[in-house]
Image (cartoon, rainbow, N blue to C red; front, side, top):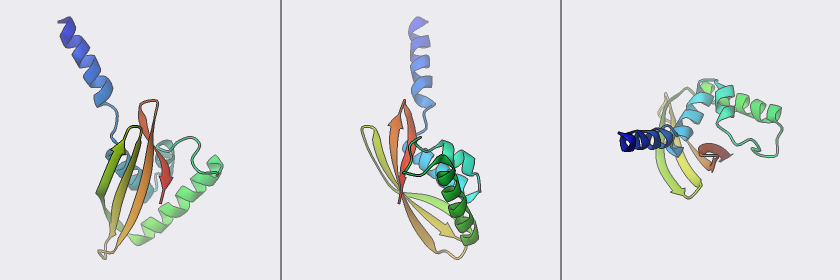
Length: 119
């Protein structure tokens, strides 16, 4: 019984952590949906050289642009993970079937994957 509880605790600890692909897709979807606060929470604390308000403004501007584009689908094109760094390439497709590519770099901090760069 004790072994089962230990195995369950380990599975829960590792199973509850979102993978880089999930974090990336959620980040993009939050921006598309205008949920910039949620997107901000999935970024490293020291993102870019901008202040917190600068990053939030940047997210808001990009959210408005993506809403205007009418993004209907977010697809993971490529994903690479090595140690505590991951790069995920996304393809965002609008209602006219035009696409926009987005590359996200993630870092694992305190066991949690966070966006560290957007290209």
